[in-house]
Length: 456
Image (cartoon, rainbow, N blue to C red; front, side):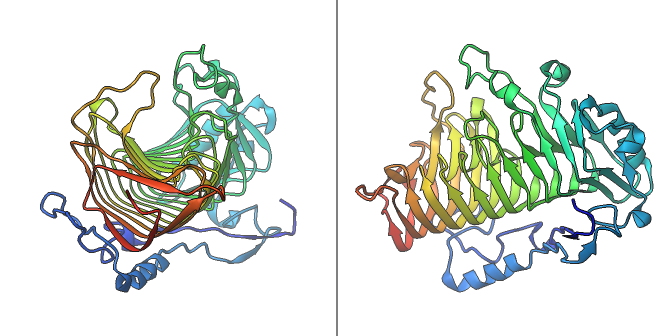
């Protein structure tokens, strides 16, 4: 960052308006919806309620206050060092030359930060190489900040991960935590990708580390970062509550295996806002135990689209509810907005809205697949399934790279229920081909406005 330049302080806040019920007062009861079985507020969209919904979204307190700061008067991004008593990793022995292992210095700096009355840890504009590391709470301060201004790059020695192959940077049990900056987190994933069974069929299928995991965090903000080339997933929100990811960029090559952008599991009240995700797998994946999840103004592609699931693998239970994807743009993805469940599972995926979405050269723009099977051998036919109920698709437009622009492949024993298509306009990316649709085992499908292609 140049001296004397001006920067903008990015402070993100989660509105209490959405913490309990992100879709309340917006949706009425859907056809076939049984409130006694699934007590909630979900249903179809009425035009006279849409203004109320937009107003509620406007009330999201994304107060990234545009105060202009002279960086000569501040250490870097955010708050004056003289007020917050920042801890600098360099003061604890970090070299920042991109070669030296700085893991121990980061551990010492975090210990000091977490035990201080006002905890702010700064990673300056250098390149720091780290082995797997856990930043654990609870911390003494009511407020903890990690400011990443330089680059943190992962060790490319796979033996460094012998004790824990699932995590690289793990943030565990931290409350009131902000991770911000204009820096970069680089997972150095190439060594893992080339040893993936999806790339090298001679290799066994094993796990690889998630680049950044937030586990059991509460009131968490991740703002302004560039996270790239993850070993596997880029960011994982796990068993966390009140989470906001704002203005993040997640990137990896299109052919990098299993490099999901943001993975949400067992977490509630999650907002993903104004972010760009270009990876080799799902841009956003939302799985079991997640509730009240919103993605607003997200650009996705390349990648596998925005997915709920997979759910129900190995005859397991899965529960996902109250999900909204609004104002998204998907470009060149292998799927658009997708719900995917395995046969044999149980539970539900319900109360879901996909709206105001642009598709550009997207395969399977709208897809529900209750017969998902991501394995080399065919999956056995099973009677049970995760129930998919109460899903609205509204104002989705663009071009389909596949012949089927709308594909509902629902279970014959647990058919999809209460599906609404409203104002859909999807055409083929190729001028000489028509976009088609298929809708199998859908109960009480309702269309509103112009829907093309029509469900058949």
